[in-house]
Length: 129
Image (tube, rainbow, N blue to C red; front, side, top):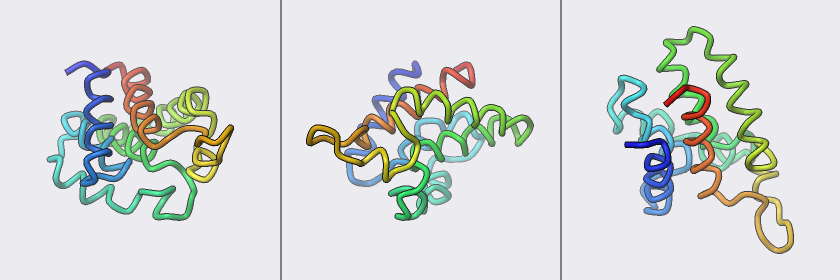
């Protein structure tokens, strides 16, 4: 599956109502982690709506960071997550849920679907997938 196909699948999972933003991202990157999708869904369950509804860091971006940590076995992960944060901010305009959901011309700066899509694509770019 290409990174673009993974990104679209993540959006589909998010829109299904059965996955939050973080869960959708970790689900499509499960093969990168060595963990089963269901376990990743449980681990990432609390990271929706900006870190457990606190409107902080976007859950989709957190999910990508989790996958990077598993793929790298924690070695050099900070460098990769820093790069992902920088690229995500370029694409989405912000990294916190509160700012991403702020209204610009009657629409959110970056809707959840776009955050999910961009988190997967950024992961792919940074992690060489």
